Image (cartoon, rainbow, N blue to C red):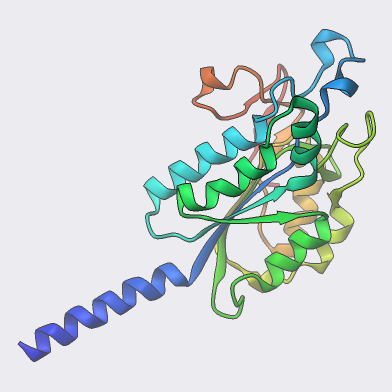
Length: 235
């Protein structure tokens, strides 16, 4: 009986250690302001709905919790854009983001810059022990960077970003071997994915061309690809 109890205890501890050894990171940029986007022609406007990068991130989080129960998930969100859009729409979007922590059993962290993300990657939850099993980004981007607040503060401009030139500051040992990395933003695989590979040793799946965050309900609440675009899963 004692031997069996000890065996069960060891199995329990092993399971706990396995879950504690990894972390999955989801990053969400923020929406544009409607007052800026209304200057664009109808077919060129962004973010008519404020929640494009929230709904898609939450869908991914729900799927991860179902596929990998026990995996700690951290959601990094660019709060300032949601505060600005919330003020414009008269809705407490930033507060709604914070409520996801208790609702989904995840850790929610607000960030202000690409440097904040790199610091979290490098230090996180004791990186000598807890490795990153996955990293995914939902938001605006171009071939060189993630743009967290495109058309949020200034029309047609981003004032907060993670540029591929900053990636050299990432400690590659923060990631687990064969960690999954993907950007759901536009154009990432045209340059930034290769820079991510040089910095981390891991290829970031990304789009060649534009991604499409419209009509999400037709694609299971995941972004799709614009006409002529395709995913590139390795260099």
